[in-house]
Length: 134
Image (cartoon, rainbow, N blue to C red; front, side):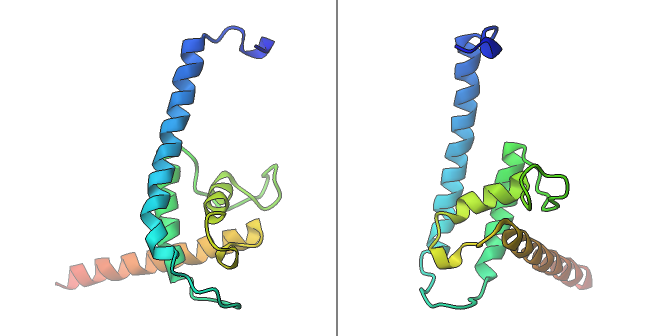
């Protein structure tokens, strides 16, 4: 064991690893839940509709919140150019998708996320407006 971890008991390490494994299991369940909506993506080339991406972003925000990961896409000052922990998380999940459905770069992913957030906010405002008119 490295000197850095000499004062940590095996019980604490086991507890921390179990917590991480539990969170990964939650991510797997979320991925399993969204898989049916993305597995039928056509293999055509070019820009495809990204309406399904809104659901992905909404789900990934929930997952990130459960994991205690911030959901910012503002990568200024990030040690990894163009990436934040949230963008990295979304890109990791995107690796499960067909290559054509993945973001090619972290900045592309950030733009997709922000466009989806904008649509989600607009939809939320529309729902609130419709409820208030009732």
